[in-house]
Image (cartoon, rainbow, N blue to C red; front, side, top):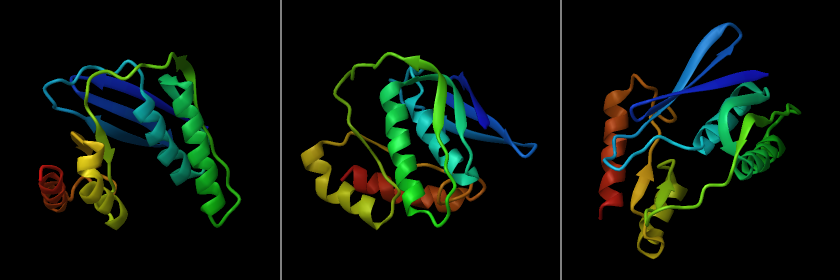
Length: 163
């Protein structure tokens, strides 16, 4: 079992965990002018799914998440396990289940990998789905130290988003 703890400070949520005596951290930053501290950490549950898949271990998130997010994580974990080449199993759980949070405002976002499929959706569906925001993850395709490559990717993404 991997225990993941979240620390939130000034627009940055850091997920800390230890695997085989090595300390790891994953973080999310937002500098949007309307950003407020999260009430629930559903986004962190999905990050925990990536951690569970990477290390093929169960993960317990020590932060409030909704039951719906955990169920979605379990469905994705099941998909990952069916698509994998081995019999490893993993799950994401939380020690604190939060009430569902109603949507607020008129913002809409798309999380993209910037691969062919998600870029196609961004380009072809932007007007119909009225995307106002996007999420690009530094550390997925480009490691944290690959700043120039990530910034070039981000520039291309923002160009498409703002067309």
